Amino acid sequence: MKLILLGPPGAGKGTQAKLIVDKHSIPQLSTGDMLREAVKFGSKIGKRAKAVMDAGKLVSDDIVIGIVSDRVDMENCKNGFILDGFPRTLQQADALEAMFEEKDMALDAVIELEVDDDALVERVAGRFTCGTCGEGYHDKFKLPVTPNKCDKCGENNFARRADDNEETMRSRLRAYYKETAPLVGYYYAKGFLRGVDGMGTIAKIAADVDNILKSA
Ligand code: ADP
Ligand code: ADP
Ligand code: ZN
Image 1 (cartoon, rainbow, N blue to C red):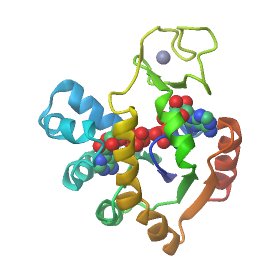
Image 2 (image 1 turned 90 degrees about the vertical axis):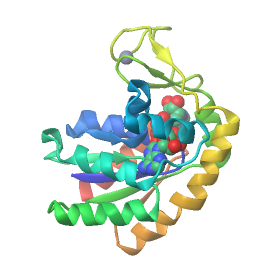
Image 3 (image 1 turned 180 degrees about the vertical axis):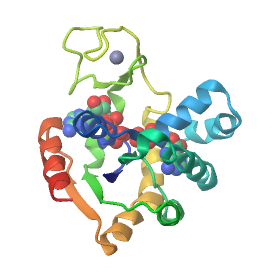
């Protein structure tokens, strides 16, 4: 199964992607995570991406297209994958289509998580992540069951993203509406788009996503 999760920053793409990973044993390909890794390791790509990410702008298409193209060739992607945060521009979507054609792959569905702006800001402001295993949490909506102990791996190694502040979030939202939102129409026209109400609980959204995947 090859799936795209589409939606603004904080919509819940990563959260839902991880639930699909557990259920369907296909990897989550998050370009945001890959870029943050590159920044952490100080690679050439990381050095180019850092300032752009800190400003809440989009990293150049050629960089992200290159990363995704390399990643889908890896062995664990052969039964499918979830694209989380890619494509984010029409140029990336066209490149993905060409990539699929060249690699003889087919897209199954694009799931759009629809969430109000106020809720997005609240979700991003309260977001934190386990630095050891990547599990996502929220100050109000998803705290670890035992305080200071990751539900998944048991570590106390939580971190917040530098770009999850109000000012950068505003710039990320602008980038979303200007450059990524046109993909909703793009995939609707191609017959792939499935909208999900992203305002419910994590469990309710997961059930809606599951129903879509059953019929995809
Ligand atoms: P969120 O899901 O909260 O928007 P991500 O982790 O997906 O955040 O992305 C963080 C940052 O990484 C983005 O603001 C952008 O700078 C960069 N980025 C991630 N994916 C892409 C992409 N497909 N194209 C361009 N930039 C990207
Ligand atoms: P994205 O990958 O789209 O940027 P995340 O999956 O990281 O979004 O979710 C953003 C924040 O909101 C996280 O702290 C997450 O725990 C929380 N969250 C995700 N889905 C929901 C939901 N349905 N209701 C409330 N909070 C949510
Ligand atoms: Zn953990």
